[in-house]
Image: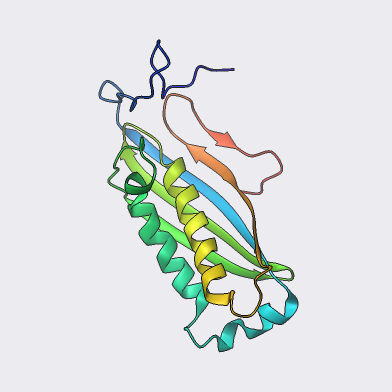
Length: 158
């Protein structure tokens, strides 16, 4: 297993110095799944707070842009792209977030943050109907660029 980069030799937490790294194009895709009862899914179009799926999409994009404000050791990045796809499925809502930049560090945390906040937004907008809604399966699907190279989750069609 590789060494954790957010700790120095004495074990003190630190922000990684990426100033010597080359700028490369970097992308990431992450997902989250919001499991909910069929009755709640059926009510989504009639939500009095507005369209929860579109609001979740916008919340996810906004969250990607603010990741370094939420995760203490993340570098603030100039994203060149952020998007969130929200798809109704039989047992809930699938959220797939993408982020891209040309920079010295990756955008995995931005994609994961976007997917997570979009899922939380779906929950927030539907919790009046059912408190047992679950946010599940938050994980990185794929990433490209950087020194560590590309990654694609096994079994992912991404």
